[in-house]
Every structure is written in C-alpha cells, then in structure tokens.
Length: 162
Image (cartoon, rainbow, N blue to C red; front, top):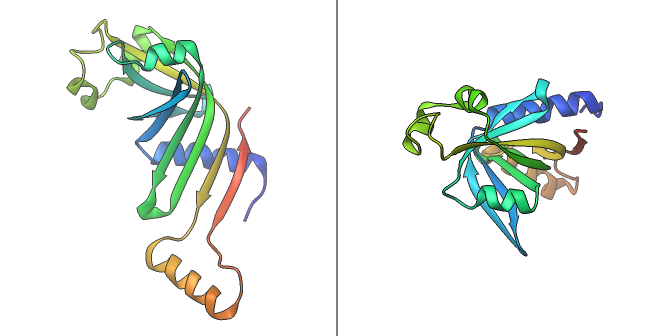
C-alpha cells in the first residue's frame, strides 16, 4: 500500500476517469442539492468538466456558492471516491464542443444551443475507498470475525489535490 502523495493523486484522477457518472452536490441556500452528471476529468488542466443547462438551477446555485462535492461510486468493483472543490460556470463554446457527446444530444439541440453551459470544477481534495467487494469482501469479514483480526478491506486515504 503506497502512501506517496503523487501516486495517491494519480489514483484519484484514474478513478475519476473510470467512473463515468458522479453526483454533483451544491448548496441551494441552506439546503444541499445533488444531481447525476457525466464528468470529464482532465488532470493536466487540474479540472473536472460537466455540461449543464441554463434551464436548471445548477448555474444559479454555483454562482451563489462555488463549493461543491462530487461523489463517484462503482460498488460492483468496490471503488468509491469523493472530491471537493470549487466550481464555476463557463459559456465557452470551444470547450462545450470538446465536451459534446452523443448523450448530450438527448438534452440539447447541439453544442451551439444557447442553453448549454460548461461547469469547471477545480478539485481541492479527495478521499477514496478502493477495496474488495462481493464474495471477496465477505471472505475478508468472515476471516476477521473468526480470527479476531481486522479485515483487509483495501485502501482508504485522503488526498490533497492543490
């Protein structure tokens, strides 16, 4: 198990690339709202991008409070990741064209639809849990219960992404 910070940061970025849906949580006054989003993680830019619409409330929420939490989960593979950061809304047509996908066509009339915006999240820190799942996890828990030892449930660490 590596505790080298650079390896942990690379692992966080790899998890973001592997898990293609996350919940983006933002503040709406004193409430927290979350919605499923398709992330595009770009480590060289230290940014995670999403497409959003002016029809929703996400852009208003982010203009009032830029702190967000991204929750990634792939339970069938025992992979979980939470990223906190700062978000901003961009009306950057070249970026929107880069982020455009077939899935986006279900929501908008094309990348030049005036309702489409990009969200850029600059990550600050993360925490990941990456370990056994399913039958393997049950074996670990059963062995631990039988022997009194702590189960080996994989890696879990906080990672600074500044």
